[in-house]
Length: 171
Figure (cartoon, rainbow, N blue to C red):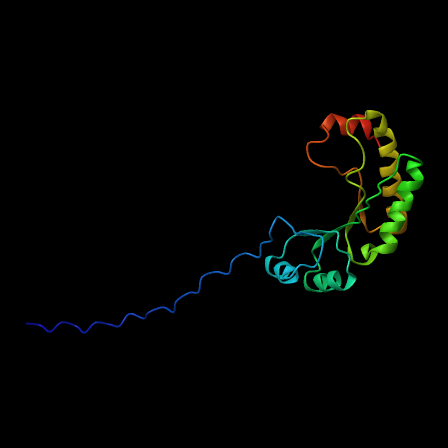
């Protein structure tokens, strides 16, 4: 017999590393009322698209924005005395001024909320006054900080029907 040809070594390809996961963002965002331990690290790790805060420490939010400038931050100043029925336009403007004067909203936030525990849903007579308050809040935020998105008329899910918004909040 004829000798068999010696096998030609087949090159072994280098292993291909698995692809990097896509740069996705968590669709939910934290709602912070204080700088709880680990909050900064969690924001850096999960990179949410948005965060809502009632914790208005400028240093904290400045660091967040340095690490994640595309984070959409919504600020909310809670007011235990949410009086607005007497002089709703004046009170809406005054609350907007208070938000801008006592929080880092103008510098670090992308949006600010007005009241969201704002009136008795069972008393439709108050809805027109609430609409005036919310419109004044919106207008004052836009006048003083045009880059901010005012969130007015926000209330808990299920409190109003879609038709209620159309009927009672024309502004």
